[in-house]
Image (cartoon, rainbow, N blue to C red):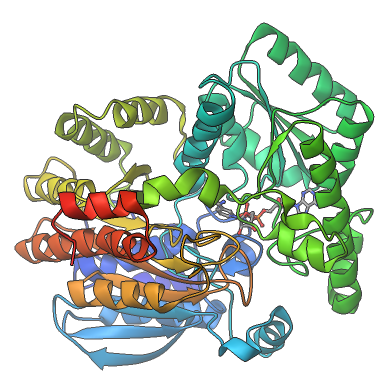
Length: 552
Ligand code: NAD
C-alpha cells in the first residue's frame, strides 16, 4: 500500500507514529530517515534529491529511490541491502544484529579521484555525491551542525575575546544547509553576525526556520543594523544578499574589521557549488551546463579574490579561520599563493574535543512527536547533572531551535557518555516513555571516522593527515558492533580527492538486541577517535584512554 501510494504521489515526508510499514523498526528506521532527508523542510533541493552541501544527494535518481523504498519494505532481519552511490545493487544474507543497510557513496580509486572524472560518471548516471549525511540518511537539517558551530565560536571567544562575544562581530558567507547554522550559533554565543549569500531564497529559508533574524539586499542597511546591535551589546544576525567577496571588499574599503571571520560557501565544489563573482544565478546555471571548464576557471579565480580579501582582513586584525569547505585549496589553485596563511578550524578549536572521543552525537524521534525529544532532553539532563555545559546547551536548544522534519537533537558527547545516553534512550522506548523508537547517529565529521587533510585531520601531530586506514577501521568496527546502517564515503565536506569518511546509525527500539548493539557501537565509535589521536601522539587522548581502560 505504502509503495503504491508513494508511486502515485511521491511525497518526501517520513511517515510518523507507531505503525510499522516495514517488517521491523530496523528497516522502518532507514525508510523514515531516507524520506526525512528529502523532506522539503530539511533538504535544500528535494526535486533533484539534493539534501545539502552543493550536490549531496540521498539517492541516485527517482528509480533508485523508489526501489530502495520497495526493498526496505520487504527486507527481513536475516538480510542486508547494499547501496552503491545511491542505487540499490544487491541483497546479502546476514543476521539480526548485522547492519540492515550497507552504503558506499562516491568512492573512486585515488588516482582517478577528481571532480572531472566524478562528474563524467555522474553525467552517465553511474554515481552520485553522498556528501557526509545526505547519502547516509542521517541529515537532520541545519541543527545538525549548529552545536559544532556554536562550540567553535564559543571556543574562539574563549581563546581571543576573554570568553565574551557580546558586541563582537562574526562575518561569514554561505547560508545554505550547513552554513545556515552560523547566524543562530553566533547569536546563541552572544555575538552579532553578518553573512552573505548570493541566493536570496537560501537566506529566506533561514528566516523562515528562525536561524537568522533579518535579511536585506542593501549593504548599507546591513551595516547599519550590525553597528547598532554591536553598540548596544545586543545579539543580532543579518543575512546580506551578496557575493561573499563583494561584501568583504566593502568591509575593507570601510575599514570595518570583523572580530571573527570565516566562510561556508560550498567552495568544496568549484563547479556545482561555489558561484563565481559577477554572474547572476541564471548566468551561473547556464554556464555550468554549457561550459563547465570555464565555470571552474571563473570559480577558482573568484575564490582566490575572496580569500585574498580574507587575508587582508586577517592582517588588519580579524581572527580568521577556514570552516571546512576547502576554500584555501581552491583559492590556491585559482592564484592566491598565501591561501593557507590562515588555519583550519579543527586544529584551532575542535581537536581537543576529539581527543576525548567527543563528537556530534545526534538522535531523531521516529514518532514525529516533539514531546519525545523533550523527554530525551530531560533524561539527559538527569543523567549528566554535573555537566553544566551540556545542561546549558540543552536549555538553549529547546528554547531556540525550530525542528525541521522529524524532531531531532544534536549534542556533542564523548567516550562513555554516548553509550550511557544510548542505553537511556533504549529504556525510554522499552518503558513506553517515548512513543516510538529513537534513531541515534552522527556526522561523518567525528573524532575517529574521517581522514581529511585540509579539515578534520589537518596538521596532525605525527604528520599522518592523509592516512585513511582510520575511517576504514571505523567502518569495520561499527559493522562488527552491529550498527543498523553503515556507510563509507569519499569527498564529503572538502570535495573529490580530499577526504574519506565513515558513518553509522543505530536504532534504539527498546529490545535486548538493540541494547547489545548500542553497547558495542556507542563504545567502539568514540574509542576509534581516541585510538586515532593516541596513535598520533596526543597526550590528552592518552589520558582519556587510561581513564576508560583503552590503552594498549
Ligand atoms: P549548500 O550548498 O547548502 O550552501 C552553500 C551556499 O553558498 C549556497 O546558499 C550558495 O548560494 C552560497 N554561495 C555559493 N557561492 C557563493 C558566493 N560566491 N558568495 C556568497 N554565497 C555563495 O552547502 P552547505 O551544506 O551549507 O555547506 C557549505 C560548505 O561548508 C560546504 O563546503 C561544506 O562541505 C562545508 N561544511 C563545513 C562543515 C563544518 O563543520 N565546518 C560542516 C558542513 C559543511
